[in-house]
Length: 153
Image (cartoon, rainbow, N blue to C red; front, side, top):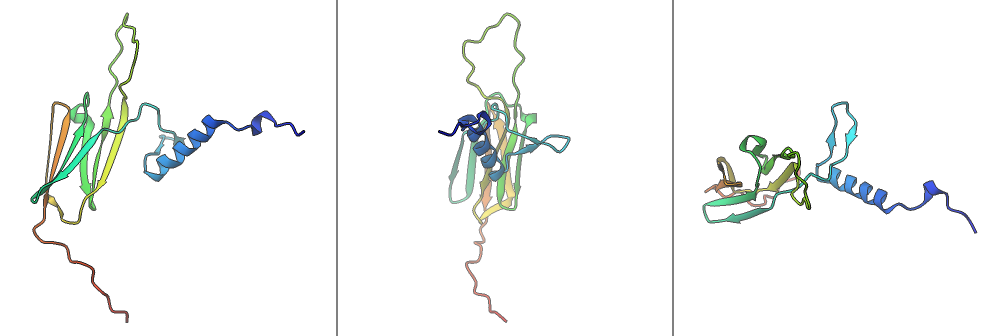
């Protein structure tokens, strides 16, 4: 019977960390530290819940961001991709306070949404009130051209 050396044994936590790292890179969530070394995502990173809806005139994105300050929130629309990112900072612990449970996540967050072709980047409005971000993107009246056959020369 062959003995398995300790370093060769299967470690499910290592496998999970490797899978998590690969998924993070796939979705663009991997961070690099200032000295160029890879930094894995911390367990405190989170993703806010979002609702996306539409009317005939606009698209609406609502993101729940409790305890996020407006200054720690950034919204961009570039090349048809709406990006919402920022940070929920952990409050300083008070002396003498003991937590029995901590379920709130803190840290950086990032959400990206590919918008439909008729979303008009010149008609974007964002507001933030009571921990809810509302982004409204107008729809273009001009419908993008459908598929066009291109002659091969």
